[in-house]
Length: 193
Image 1 (cartoon, rainbow, N blue to C red):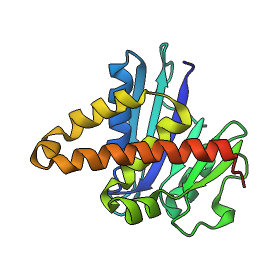
Image 2 (image 1 turned 90 degrees about the vertical axis):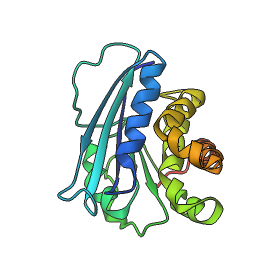
Image 3 (image 1 turned 120 degrees about the vertical axis):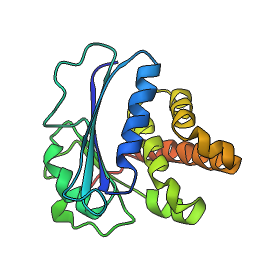
């Protein structure tokens, strides 16, 4: 696999950093090179948090990047904060459950996709698995890790919670699958701005 650069952004407390950490662990478990760099807003809860992830089969030269292959913005403020990471090669994804000013969307992007992750979490699953839907979307958009590797890394990260409440395992795995499907469907439909 070629180098894939991903920028995930959301409000503090949305689980952006957890998703990035789980994806990096899944990539590592598949013997891929992975770098994850967290970037927090002014306050950890309430500010925009960005996670920078790079995954490749070969050595990754620089830990930081200016332009991403995929940007996923999980809130309206995250859209504005991440538009600068886009260029003509970027797939820019935002959640359509938030009011997004079209002016905040990147001026340059290969494709802009609106995805109903927050509404899907709230209406079909549980609000707390919104970030796991996003993780599934990253897999569906990029194939940076296999679905099985993501499930294993998720199990490793949340295993103690799953032991206490086995329903959480099924809920999280379902959220992962739904996110992957949402992303794959959006790509097939070629939804652009």
